[in-house]
Length: 353
Image 1 (tube, rainbow, N blue to C red):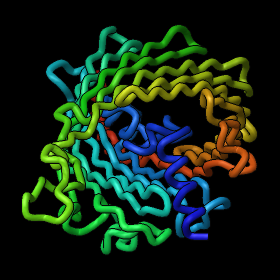
Image 2: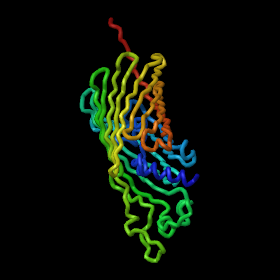
Image 3: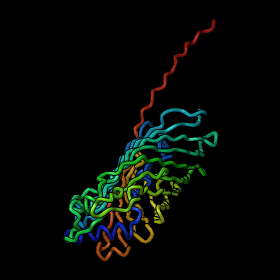
Image 4: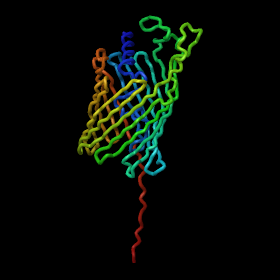
């Protein structure tokens, strides 16, 4: 059973989800703004935004303890005005932890970023946001059974799995990201935004294999320890349109590429204002990740709280093993609004005589 789960994890990593093998991705990409584009930090009306998202995949195939798990949390805020009074500066902090399959390959990161939001119109109808993130990333092979003795789960000795050949238990590296986003209000009922971001700009060293030791029984490739994490590029966009006083439509897309592996997502989300007095909106829709999965989307907005659910119905070649069961996501974010009450100076009326 362990061998079957391990083989399935390798197939999933090397086949369909090439990007997942190297970096994180989410179906509800708009619910995790700082992992989509660093320039989204502080781009909202309010005092503080806090949120999180959790993705689980293949749990029904390889078991819950061996599944792919990715939690991420973030907090961001617009803090001060910019050079001009209509501009502002936002800051953001985010953390994620990604565990890939039975082999337990982990990718963790913590990053702090800042964004300058430049208003291109007097009424702030068009805003250009430019931002970046700086932090630390790390990788670790979590399952000691996989490499501590140099034997794979079938019992065969593999030199590259031995401790002598793999002397690095952790790989920590500096990580730098940057992004740009343009948003504009087309009219009273429609707005649109487009963005581009690049992650791992400095391509930090993330190899788990050590350098060659001439005296080791199975020396590794001398350049193994110099492997660098590839850059990840993202292009995304979204249109928000109010069809009438109750119904709205939000089509969106995301294109992501990393080390020759591409991922394209297209989605359409419909919103219905269920209760105008309590400001409750119900969201539902569909999406498609090319050559991978059909996405079922649902969510709700209650005042400044947003929650979202997504389920991927696997349609790739892996569906023979997955039986169309894919990834599940749950996400939420909340905008805190703390406004200083205005001070109204009393007017003293002097009667005329």
